[in-house]
Amino acid sequence: MVRASYTVQIDWDNDGDFSDTGEDISDYVVEAEWRTGCAAAYDRTAAPGWLKLIVDNRDRRFAPEYAPGPLYGDLKPMRYVRVQATYDGATYTLFYGYLWRIAPGAGRRGEQRATLHGIDPVALLEDYPLGLELLENKRADEIIDAIVQAVAWPPALNGYWLLGVPGHMELGQTTRLGGASLYRDFETGRETFAHAGDTWYPETTTALEAIRQTCASEYGKFHFTREGKARFLDRHWPQQVHSTAAALDDTMAGLVYHEGMDSLYNEIIVRMDPRVEGTAGSVLWTKRSSALRLAANSERTIRAVFIDDEGRRHGATTVITPAPVTDFTANGKNDGAGADYTSDSRLSVSVAALATGAAITFKWGQVNGAGAPAPGPIYITSLQLRGTPLKAFNPEEFAASDGESISRYQRRRLMADAPLLNDPVTGYAMARYLLMMHKDPAVHVAAVTLIGDVHIEHILACTLYDVVEISETQTALSSAEYFIIAEHHKLAEGGARHACTWMLEPLPPFKAWLLGVAGRDELGQNTKLGF
Image (cartoon, rainbow, N blue to C red; front, side):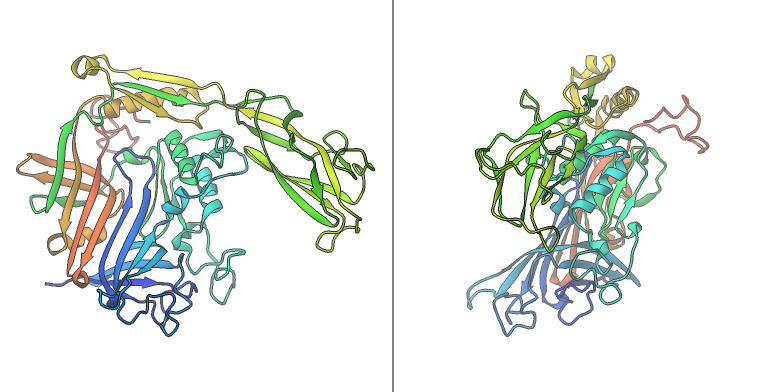
């Protein structure tokens, strides 16, 4: 029987490839395990993915402090790591992410192994406090693209040119030019959102949470592919016709199955947060602490956070650069009793606006060779920012319910937040769609486990949001269709043993009407209006 062969590589020197000496560590891998995808059915975004490699470390090559080691000096985190398999002449990428931690085991009498921990890009998004410029009139795919670019470069960009990133900006030496298609695979969002970013406060909102809110408002999906590309699926995607990637029967090694109330909801509330613009030229922020000291020939930056008189955070569509006298005063003494420098030509101010605040930079005198030299320190004794406030304090809700389902199963309410929505028509349509999705009990195969000896082709070829068809005698399942929403792999004995568990989500329980598609365009006969 033909077996798959596995390759594990780490770009130790961070040069954009896996071809250098020591970067193929396959011969040292004792065990490998990884997981990517959603934490639960109907999640809008993938959860942080992870990789765990147990490697032979008898020669101490994976000990960062071992100077004679062949990898000494290159054993650093955030190196790209890739797991691939070759089977029947085809090569499949199974995991592509970053090395996060290197943990050599201590003790010369122990197993002399090391554990290498990896993460996928979703983990970086979860860890990053987000602060963006205001995004206006953008689709979900455009908003998500801006978030991803603000945080990290996906693994699919390894070896491509990136401005200002060491190891990625030496065009023609270690890198090559690439376009957006290299790092993303995005459907076009179906909804245009008037504003985004104004409710994403860095102290409470991570990049992944912002993407989740965007997907929830579109009712789309987001994850990273095995090849390290960001992928966005619009709300129409699950309702389209999908070919079956794998048909499984009684040969599965395990099946988690139930029919219950877990995903049944017969009262749907969709909540959106429409924005209201305030008066242009309003005071957005006032400095209330002590005077800001500017040393001679220096610059200082302070951050302003927009908070109204009732203590509520808000955004702004415009921020005006502070004007002398009107918005700030400068003095030779911190109590304002000295010489006035407010309109001195050697003093300049600039502002970089974010959706929920701004960075204000003062320069006094000569800075980095620019400007005229200035003597002694001065003090900014008063300071305010003006602009146009943007507030989201009056949410709107849209409801849908099904009396027959309530009578049969009692009341089950689903609160669905769609914070970027600004169109009531879409809010009502989303509520009705969710009701069709969840008003009846669903036969749910939560997970299925496959063993490489039986299903190696499916394990290697099928991935997130492929459709699998399941039949099983004992449970009487017959051709039930599911999306793969997560995959969990375990490799041992050099790849001789490969187990894979897919977490699953049911396809929509109805066929959405599709114009011109045979079997899907007879509205009211075998299809329903989708969303």
